[in-house]
Image (cartoon, rainbow, N blue to C red):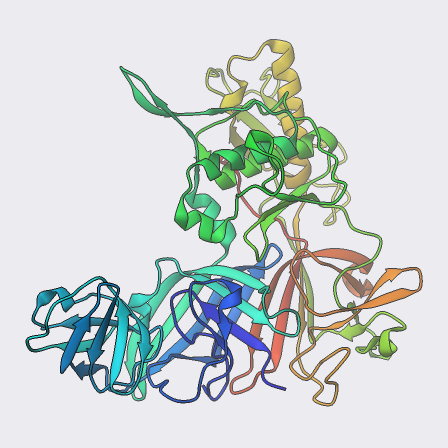
Length: 554
């Protein structure tokens, strides 16, 4: 079968080429939607860029969002300028006569034509033959003389923060497994042409570029203020926040973050994806307003407040369709990943015996890390009207986690200084004493319960392939498929390894005995000159930071 992997970069025609020999394969082109997948013809493609696998790596986080990407696209060194010998326009289409190697979607700049109305900047070719090409434009007039056509380098013609999609067509040819956006582009001259190295970013980072604020306009003032919330539960508040984001109708945000209505209307419409049967929790005692912040800060506010209400951590992420997902971090009954990780080779069963049991793999790499640096055991809450000394004997704004008999995965009892944090919490200002105590208690629960333990990260590396195993599950391009359990004695084929799945890991020597771990990130890479995928999986870590501007003391 053809190589199943497709890479699409918004605004680059033919960017679906993913092949170690840089030969044309089915690719993507057009407006940036999955339905624009096309098969590139074999002729007239000299100006098409090719993706080289030896520099290809994508890391995803949050169920399909690409946290880090690195790949090289090479554009062959071919003639990039053509001489115009004739032009005609009918008010909708302009036809240029010129010997060329252009194709549909090429971006060109035309100069030196008389009349000047036919001189265009970064025009997209609508149709092309070897002697003519057309663009959509309203210019008209009798051609007099002159004209030169220059192909615009693809990295200059693509959209700002262009959307990146990576497909495994065995999973889906229309739904990507990874989503991201271009964050850095570097072009350099090479012997065979222009080499362009691109890096990408997780769309969750786009939440840092979106402000959550309310404008205040009056006869005597213009300001940006807080959002007063009318909803009371975490689910309803998230939908209300996204209502304000959607109200701005920002095209750049809409390309990566879909905040349109799923069901309902107005502030109460559902705009995010919640677990089926998710039970909202009231956080109105803690979150009454959203201070001027980023969308990520607003989401952190809600997630940690909800965690404080019922002591269960929340997670949120952006899926391949651009939807914000929000859920409790609670393991399901059965793992949802395509396979289980074992350390005993005798237990390995990659094919799941044809669907009669769970697929089991021995990892090529397996490690667990406990980061004690980020632990917070005591927090001082700094509010708008607080100016007394930070004295833990009398300070009503101090909260401490498990002061006596501190426990955790590192040691049964901790010794020495307790790491502290200074937390900006302006919401405390103006509350009554009773309400203030309840507020701080709930906040302390949510924040300290998550941040008081060492940050555990489990890393798993899956490599290799089985060229003879091509179906149910297919392992000829790497171990990305397998059978997962869905009932006491029922199994089904899973076609992709994705973030937000739960993977079962049985590694007693590392203190992980049959535990279900949430997959937070997946990194795809390919050995040089091959299409054999190696996957590096990260489980169980949490993001650092949040709305409350955590600062370490001492």
